[in-house]
Structure formats: structure tokens, C-alpha cells
Image 1 (cartoon, rainbow, N blue to C red):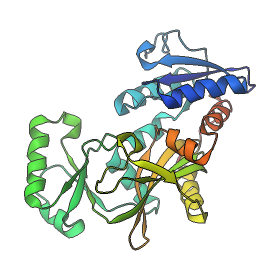
Image 2 (image 1 turned 60 degrees about the vertical axis):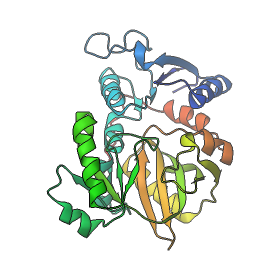
Image 3 (image 1 turned 60 degrees about the horizontal axis):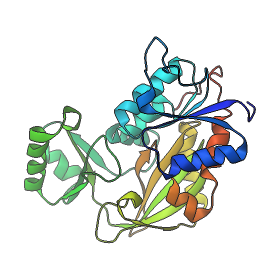
Image 4 (image 1 turned 45 degrees about the vertical axis):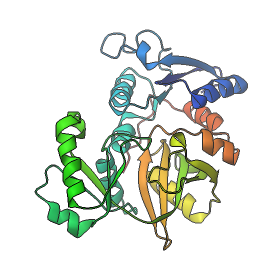
Length: 295
């Protein structure tokens, strides 16, 4: 695909990353259509609402799990190659499903459980112990992440979910609490490690830069590249933010996989041309090419 062919950016928010993509597209000579998710009409008739060039590869940056998965599926059905595609968004967007996928792939993920009721507190005690961490199964940016110190805390969390949470959150996704020495974000594109940072926020479980954590450079080595290739190789073509947790004993765990990662901090810390690499990769996508299945 030539640099003159149109590309598209569909966004849910127009922040630093989206501005960097627009700026870099101009520098690289790409024609980039910028469309808000609100402008799309996704369906069998004019599935892109007439706003997107026919067959244009789409970089989809909608942080909402529900909106992004529907948009990715509809755009692909209309003939648009999409980064990230629906299958990747659906897998990474639910923590419980991505944990199962990681374990099946032989990758090191934190021990976790999903409870649909409080009938299996014995499994929590035996598998995770206390204290532990509860997170929304669907959600991001460290929102609603809490430490639970005992069974009373767990019961209170369950009661709160049943009383106030939307139906999609009325389950308990629980992770073992580990003593994290280093919280590292890896940016990975098609199995290649683009950049890495450590996120530092003493005294809190939430290490997201967007929530106030400090980003510092992280020296990447063989193990970081190996992990990027292991996960990215199973999700070919995907752009991912992988959370690597290293405990006080040096054990390494995959905390989460993020399919719509923000990349400002990692790009600024490392000097990596993340926006340029994304656009160049997007320009190679072809809807007619047989889709590589992920393992």
C-alpha cells in the first residue's frame, strides 16, 4: 500500500496520542481521516456512515470495551482492516478471559479467580489467600481496583456489586496480591517490543501514569523481548500494552493485556517513534489478505 492511500483514525477521545498520530501522518505523507466514534453508523446499510473511505485501514482507539468490540466487528464486515481487530479487543477487554488465555498459552499470569456467588469462599482461601485484589472484569486505568484484607471485605464488595454495579460487573474478579517491586508497561506491535517504562507510585496498588504514577525508563533485555514475542506471536498484528509485574523475589507475572494502550509516557521516555510505527504498520494491512488466526 502506498503512502498516498487513505488511512483512518477512529477515536473515542482526542488526546495526546491521537494528536501525535495526526502530526506524524502529515510528516510521513499519509492521508489520515480522523473520525469520532460518535460519527459512525454501524450496520448493514452504509456501515461507516459514509465518513470513511472505502476499504481504508482503521486504527481504532475507542477505550470503551463494548463500543470498540462492536465497532471493530462492523468495520471489518464492511471491508476495513482494523487495528486492533475484534478478536483481540474481545480477548484483552475481559480480564478473566485473558487470564485463561495466558494460562493456556503457558505464560506466567497472576493467580486469579472469578466468583459468581459467595458459595466458594473455600476456593478463595485455598487458591489466593488474603489479602487479595478485586478489579472490574471489564475496565481500565486502575479504576475501582481495591485491596480486600479478609472475608468480611470480600462480602462487602459482593454486596456492593449486587446493589449498585451494572450487570456486566456483577461478578468478583480476584487476583492474588503480590509484593510488586517493579510495575513495567511494555508496548508491543506485531510481536515486536517498541518501548518500555516502569511505573512508580509508592503506597498504592494503582500504577497507571494517567492516575498520577511516575514513568521512568526501563532497561529492556532478552526476557522483555521474549515476552513480547510470546504474546504478540499469538496475537499477530496486534498493538498491545502488556503489564509486567516483577515481585520482590524476582518472579515475573503478566498482570494485564491492554488492547487500546496509551503510549505517551513510553514514547517520551524511550524516544521510540510509536505513532510512526503504528501508521506504517496500519498502511500494510489488507482486508483481502487471509486473516492469521491467533492461538
